[in-house]
Figure 1 (spheres, rainbow, N blue to C red):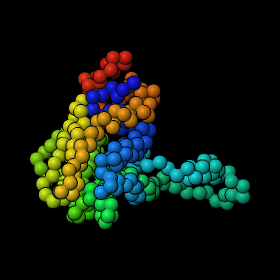
Figure 2: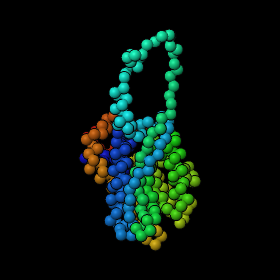
Figure 3: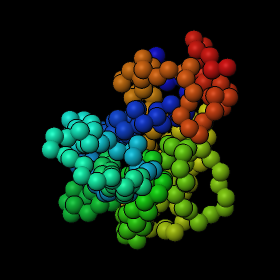
Figure 4: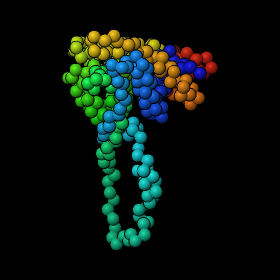
Length: 262
C-alpha cells in the first residue's frame, strides 16, 4: 500500500522505525543524486559519531549488544552472592543516577568536487538527537563549522518533536522545514516551512555557482521507501501517533479509507 499521507508520514517518527528510515532516506537521496552529478562531483555517505549524556538520549541510540548481554547475565541479587557475609547492620543507600554517555551515529551526505575532494555541499537529515539536549549542542557546533566555511548546507527536518534549529528570521511556525544555505550568499538562506498534510517541497540542490542545480524531490523518495520497506504491514494506524501528535490531527489528513483514527 502507498504512503497514506500526502506529505511526511508522522508515524515514522517512532523510535522503532526512525533509525532505519533515516538511514534508508539518506541512502536514497545519495542514489538519486549520483547519476545527475557524475563525473564532476562525488556523492559520499558517511557517519558522524558523538556521545551525549542525559536521559533524553536513552531512547535515541541503540544500546551496545554486548553490554545488554553482560547485564542480562549478571547476578540478579548481589546480596545472595556466595561468600558475602554481613557482619554488621548495613546502612540504607540513597538511590541516585549517574550520567551515562550514549554513542550517536548519524548518516549524512557530502557532495565533493571529484578533482579536488573539496566538500561542496553537506546534506543533513536531522534526527531526534539533533534537536534535544546535549546532542542539539553538538550538532549546532558542527552546523556552525559548515556555515563558517565555503560549503553549502542542506538541512532537512522531518521531525515535529524537539526544538527547531535556529535561523535569524521572523517567528516561522511549521511542523517541518528544509533549510538551504548557499555559501556565496550567506547569511541569506532559503527556508521551506511545511506542515502535516503538505507535500514535502522539492528544491534545487546547491552546487558551485557555475553549475546547474538538480531538483531533489524528497516526497517521491519518502513515498518509494514507504512501499519498498513495507511499512504498511507494520505500522498500526489505530494506535496513538507518536508524541507530540494527536489522533485528531491525524484524522484530518490521513488519506486512507480502510482504517479510521476517529
